[in-house]
Length: 413
Image (cartoon, rainbow, N blue to C red):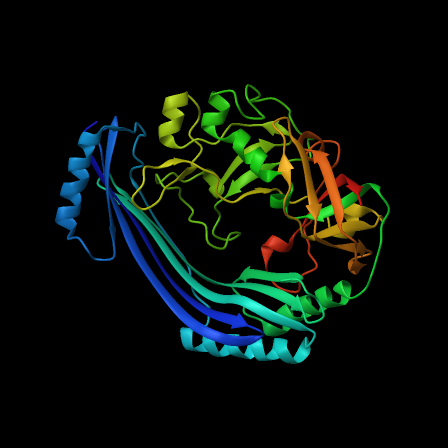
């Protein structure tokens, strides 16, 4: 293979309205434009990164070619002969409109929830990623969306903060977000209790030892025999209700390009890692696939000036097709709100303290539970104790991250 030249371009603009004590503290704008110039010869790669317009393009290519002399190993075959452009950035408020809406949101929070002080950030995001090379590749993805990350401090509490509210989506609907927060406040101010033992837990998948699971499916840990799933490719490792996949579909994701950092595009924009409980394959970038003799899974990540390497992007469970009520079948459940400080042992035993949780019953929050501890083994959480990802949520908004995973766990006080 001869010399291949490739440009990896990232641009973003963020408008952030910062709150302190329920009042607007500042409005900030951050623009970033970065470009990585890559030159590869089939065995090595040279990269030169440019932030802004600091370096002329001709000079950047020259520096990238010079960096080939560093002999950084890189053996991925370049993506070629594909042109695809996706733009899902339409429909968001203008920057002026967003500033006014965020200010109105802050005023509404102050009036409707006088017992809390709200702080942190409300943002409008624009992002664009483009990858082109000289063998016919031209891919681009453009998106725009909102993020809300609020810390809620009870005026009668000595704590730094007592609740949190987060939203990420393409609707900035003040009434829907306030409806969510009203449910949180009602539950927070209503005491509830639950016995020790085994209970259904509703949680984000990422709060239940997900880091150890992710570590075990990376190409290097699999090949080196250090991960949870070493040597288990093609084997049934979880319950057959469990399917986990990397989702790059523009219709179901918010800020995830449909292609990876090497230009790979999966069929249906989806890469199954576990399907019906079977470990399909570890995730591998093109270069790691060659190195470890594994299938390339379209799982390359990279900084604009970095060598593409294996990483996880938007790994999530497939929906069970059942609602929260159907998954619980009349049982009450624990809904995690804040759980941090947990850990997972090398053999998959997970435990974490739960700082804030609500009792859930018959489709709604009942009240706030005392401080708890929860535990379980990953092979049980995704095995006999797995119930599934709910197709609904308790949020009034379009935020996909509020669809909770239901599993059975051991609960201690």
